[in-house]
Length: 132
Image 1: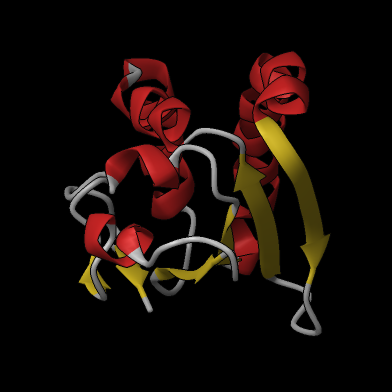
Image 2: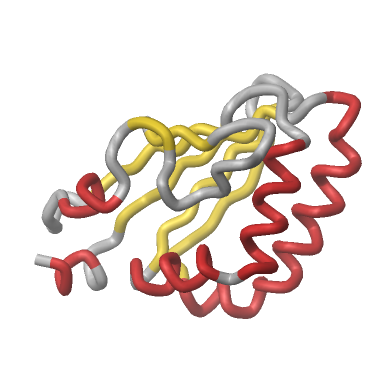
């Protein structure tokens, strides 16, 4: 079952609600994180989209990775964890993540990331990450 998840596209939809007074700080961290991984993102993903929602303080991120193992390794990187923690500290509400499993695949992505508080994102941030 695990090998199928590596070849089946899954989609993460993340919503970051940024505290207005910390927006510049959040965007500086985001920019550094994005730029540090831009080349790898191009190779590792089916697609990515970063954009503002109707709420001008809500950033929506859509990412579909080619290999779930890449995401797992990225989340282990200390620099990545520190950046995510710092961005969560700039938020005024929990970051939420919705998952979608490709129609041709299995549902094992939901076993890796069960609904509720994230077990893979920083636990000591000002705002938690919640899987929907």
